[in-house]
Image (cartoon, rainbow, N blue to C red):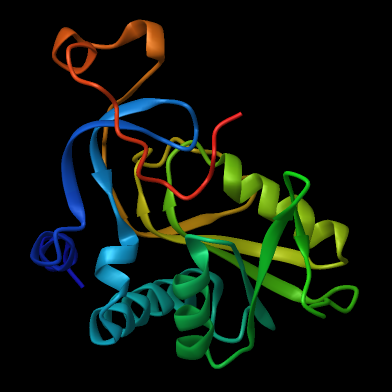
Length: 195
């Protein structure tokens, strides 16, 4: 799937937003990708995750993982659909007392080969936290995936990160906002509350 086709899925569903946004990382940005809006359409989710699964197979090899694990909330649909496309089970972590953990009876056998899957990566913080939970549960993380890598490849999640699309979306610390963003109140569209 080519870049313009990927972006068309986001544009056609109003999932690519412009304005002043406060990201889960605490950084500010003038663009926000609301994956939930594109993933609400099963045909689009399937097409995007099929393309991502093809990249996983090409990068890690077919049957590289036994399971896909995603962080709740944003990664659940992508993780489920990627698992379906790869023909493996898919589970998710949830925050308990602010820390990702496996709940709902989900467990990993020691040495289980895992692909951690997200919707968006900006700084990689959520990915690293999810990977830590997977390792704590006995899983061996062979790679990580996301639909969109907002860091344009600079986020380090500690394992190979395979993205459907890399974008250079500028982010700013609160005390270093450009004047046009500073003049507009920030909207917090993400699923994770800031501390």
